[in-house]
Image 1: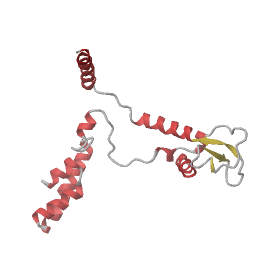
Image 2: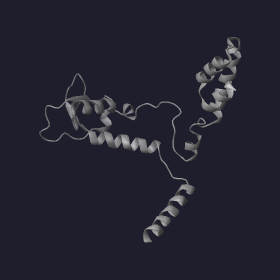
Image 3: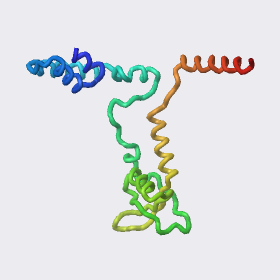
Length: 172
């Protein structure tokens, strides 16, 4: 029973601890670990999600099976810089080789919309600016690539019928 739960819910440690607590048989630990680990790996390779996320996945919503890295840490500031406007001085700065996540943190820390971008530590020459708008646009574009969602046909039909019903009710 613990192995079935470990596979279906992908809660390996919970299954083992639950079985040990309910039975009180420490002698069964080794077979329990073996059965739960086999069930976990079989379900991991054959199922897209656990029993908790299966219905959500069928609707087309992406559910992560593990923690994902921050999108902004994968982009350099150099990819998002724009030209320096006239009169831009005395701004906090980042280097063009830093990641966009650091720039976003600094924008939030100093409550700014713009940061100066310097070439490198040795040169210290300004090469451009990075704005909060550029970071937000990059983040939004990357998330849209990952999470393209289309409503299933059944949901669309229900929404159309619901609108028709609402129109009929409002006319009365």
